[in-house]
Image (cartoon, rainbow over all chains, first blue to last red; front, side, top):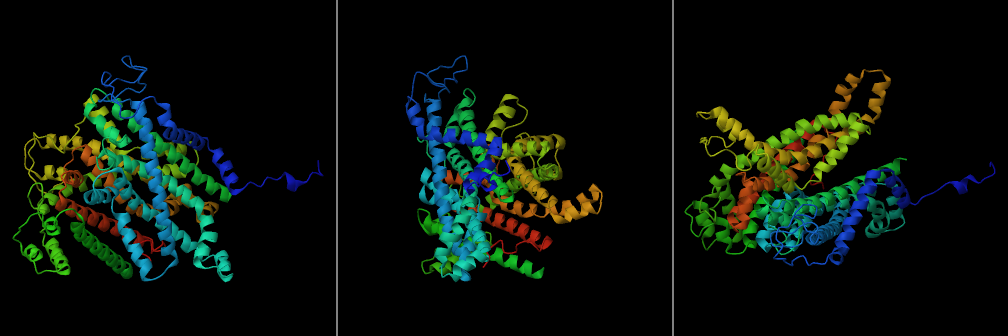
Length: 297
Length: 340
């Protein structure tokens, strides 16, 4: 036994593998990941799973309760709404609209935020000061106010709601990137790269960005959960997606008129939003502590 | 200290100036005639507005008159009601402030001690329970939570009223706008019943707003307590054999509380969004409900003024909190805002 080569037995996982090993340690986080994957699958494949269209009105089956109720029907597993539209189908499409519009919003905000953060982090003087003042105002203004202003100028619609929420999300990425870039610029490996003749763009792309990706993923995850909450809230207030679009917040707002006789019309879409946000938060939290543990262990 | 005060005063002033410029610019971006959007009517006979609407003024002079009008309390009139906006807003603002203050107070009173409890038992059973429940709490969409509360507590159980600030039976004269203060000051019969009724109306909205804020405060406090407990000075205090009580009150408590104030400052804008949504659902007659009504009616002067006022209040509160936490703890990053 003694002559076995110790070095070959030792496992050297890649950074990604190490993160996954830490992530697996927390069963709740894995559970969250499973639920999130389910949501993503449903969002992509939902239209294939359901025999109905989200706008088809089954006029002879209005306000049917979910199938486990005595009056329920197996044709509409989660019941129908006041216009006879199948709830399960609408939830599939709603997940699609809400989840993907949030992810898209966050991606755009992330790209813009990182670009501006790099400029703010690497530049000095008036330009940086100007960017920061404007961003502070954006960050201090409540999301709903930004949305109201954008709706007043451009009108309602899902795109405008995404624009408003994207605007509100940009500052947090800018602050994150700027602080990170500031901190890294003083480190020795950046100085080495600079001495080797790399210009600022190269330093960012090849030295700073690879170190920042994990941080951005964690923050992006939390930003997606914020975006889902805000997009559905705007839909609920009739400032975002409009009535015809099966967005989860809009569905809750529509269910309000029949809440006395059909409470599942607001309970189920709300539950979907809640579970989606919860699973994203759990995954984000698990990722964050996995990264922290990976660096300390 | 003087330098910090001057710096924050300067920063607040600049931010407010940009906000006023933005609100002036908004009148040009909104559909319709900019001057009408600024004033809310074709003719207003106050001095700054007359100057503003005259043909000879260029855009810079217009801005100057606009600032004068704002400072004079001439904020234009609403498209929808034709009433001066200043009076409307001054009537509604206290209701919003009241709701926010109670909600933040409750969230702080519960969140910080429980955060300490969780942080002192870091990675033990009680900590895990608090962490998972707070994770669930802040994943709630605030509008759904408010609807659930209405559905369960107001409609099913009929314990609490579901909308408004006070039952119509009570006629409380307007004094400060804060309903509880008004009732205490007012000279009316059935003061106690009115007070109880107002409190009953307050419970559900306050609960919905503080639910999410509580979770955030709990998590922040717990994180900062856990960080403090890992530092060298706590270890050295323990090796010196100080009793746990002394360590807690002298070393942990103060140092762990320091990061909470800046977090409170960051949370203000989220809180305002939540308050506005909750106001709409509970028909709470505050500025959020009013603003959302204004956007439904495309009442541009009201949107412009309301946006300006709410963001000014948020900026002033945030900046004062930042300034205070800077004064308490000079070691923290003093260029968190607008660094050069």
